[in-house]
Length: 141
Image (cartoon, rainbow, N blue to C red):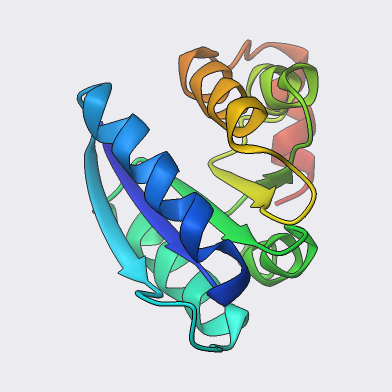
């Protein structure tokens, strides 16, 4: 599966761990940055990941910043994006099953790598349930 991956300076080290995990799981990764711990503006990174999904080059996106909040807000500006900020596996599963989230947002300063990799794995393995949930997503535009 093609996955776009992006972070700001606060998420750089965690992004490297997530990327290695995804590659080991057999996914193709498109890393849109950032590429160091030098300060960057997270909305620019979120825009790059979202555009990869909107233009069909990636099936999913993962965004990492210090808390995940800024990335989530920035990504959800796009009508086609359903970005979910998840802090544990249950919300990751529900964000896919009920909300068909296509971007996962994570906070590097609030989560450890072990829980993040569990969240990513469950998020990618969970299928959208459809049914009444599709109707609700459609209502959002």
